[in-house]
Image (cartoon, rainbow, N blue to C red; front, side):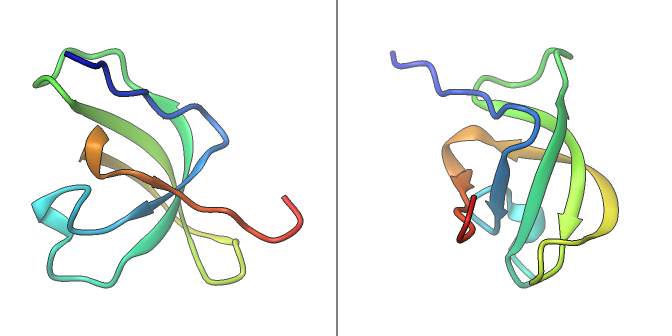
Length: 80
């Protein structure tokens, strides 16, 4: 079985319904990871702490989210 890569602090990820069913009823958003919990979870899932970003890449809310690793997608911003 292939182990999914855990996000690293500083990474920006697209969070949407693929990340977790809890995000199915809202628009996708970009999330900048601050930390990745080492707390045990179900296989393939992880707790992330970070910032929800607006369209300009500015932090609008600090959040802790529980997401499925297979549903995370990196966000590439121009100039980064």
